[in-house]
Picture (cartoon, rainbow, N blue to C red):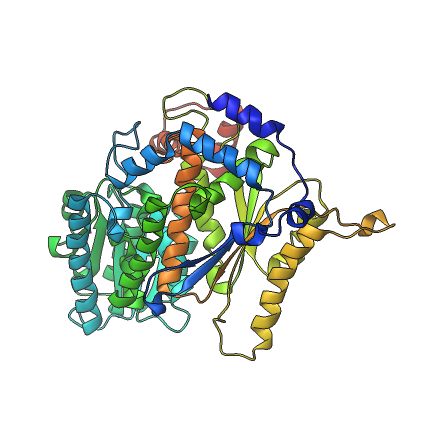
Length: 506
């Protein structure tokens, strides 16, 4: 049945963006939505504008038919009900329960875990563990990217504790953090679902050695563990009173809302972290309760599928016109590519088309002087997301922010309109798509809703493609071979052998 829907989609007319606007006076109203996070004015709102994409009534209707054929409503219900939606690992995916939306028992368990995290955060900030000025948070993947993004985005006006997120096994990364910290006023957070991740545990041991070398009394008393394997943390030496668990059903790249968010709560204080959760919950409820193209993450997924499958776009670009969101493209890169970069469906059969595009991006206006040449005049069609905030994040003259937003909106207009010229080198073809996400202000609530929107967009794309977004076996083979190299005794291809010998580790 879905083959027939895809055939119909491929056969639909594909007017230009200019033609779409000229032919439908209601286009902006249909595809641009103001999302209010709640009745409380302090939570704010976000504008989602997908009108400069090639979605039209005919394509939307066909994609809604596809969503029905793929049982989008059923898969969404299973997600929120805490049912198994990760069949290869036999797990639920209960990140929304961390925000208070999901199976009742899971929501209560998450609330209990949050109460413990809040108590420890508040005790530390009150001085119960002595003076704490710095926190070194070691993790990798979702255990690091999410906290790093959130701390960077939300602590511009000053963090309560100076947080350093370290993920890379490259010792340079950890040494930079250590140089910025006073060992006598530093705490260590170890974020590892299994408490066995080699990069994280190696970095943690090095921090402990740094504590000892600097004669810190009771180094283990300076450690907090964030894990779904508390027994492993106890074995490692962490006191159980400072182990902050999270559920096995919370995946790494979806774990920012759990105790993995500890460094964010330390930087902002628990009230702001609670607002962050509330903003995400507002998006959860919208995604759960809204059908068809009015569902914002599903609408975005329709556009994603249009460009990947109907226009052959292999990449998608994200540009944050806000320095505080500089890490957002990196975060979305992992979220989308690790979730949907698959070659088989959830039932184990081969996929019948492209899956996740390559997600990349940068920060405006810097990116305009680096990669926008290709976007405007290159031979690759690249759908672009622009993300910006109406309220500035600085106290400088208003010229800064006005120029920033002017550039953001101008890029979307220029990509769509293009410009003819008798000089081919100065001609812009136009008809190049973009979407814009405009926050009224970057607050914990709007940021939470923004991240949750992208989580649900990723899930919606997976449902439309019939794949499982919650496993990531593709990251394991290289790690297994790295362990073989460390152990020794295995022969590899000639190129790898030569590299090992050149590096002196053969």
